[in-house]
Image (cartoon, rainbow, N blue to C red):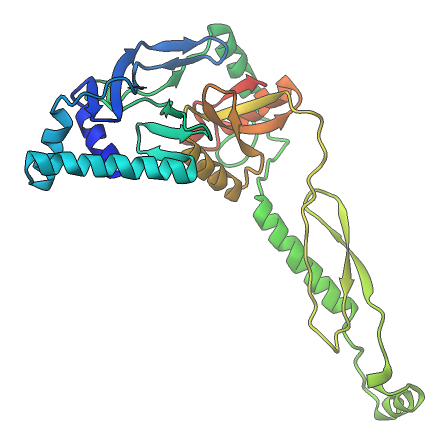
Length: 332
């Protein structure tokens, strides 16, 4: 990141316009709070930055900050700014794009036309500290969610409201581990050499069979049941040559085209979204993914073809952790 952006970020905290001599000006304006009706979300006010390449006359604001930070004279500060601008232009010429901190991104096409894209989250300002987007559903939607939640509500001990039924939760990772161990034990039992108790019988068998080094045992096939109920054929290598290896593969069932998804996070940056999706998948939520509708990025649990199925899963999700307390169902 060019050090020029750090000086501009600092100045934009308290100023609405910062001019970079011989380059352009960064101008801020405030955007009012908004509500997305279809997504049932409220967005707080934000401060958006725009770039105006026509304003290039030095107003002394940036020069004073650079002079104070580097403890140099005004002419030296101007030369430092010119060097930073030159470095920025060279990077655009070489890569065609450069990250300008939390302000935005500069891009340049083959014709040399430069374009600025502001950060979707807006620029930081003390006036809006602590404000974040939040969801507020309609009363009819909340009543429907509560009805579905009461229908599938379970106690913290794993028992349902009906004492005749017991709900036992087992993670997929534990099930895979147990299946793998069971497969290894089964293969060892099936292909273990027989116990030879009589020396004379052993001598007779040795005289009738060819030498061991000339015998090539055909690989044995064993069926292993995966956690999803499908089967897989595993090949057992000869015990004399190598150790038994067992592998369990979890097959993903082919589902119909997804029409609904559960939103667990909204209005996040691409880096935070990728990190959150990776964390959810490691914890067993394999249908976690990033959803981009062109306006904002969301982290969703996708793959639901039926609205009732999505609402049922969302109702159970509210009981799995505080981080899912605000999750909601979205139609794709």
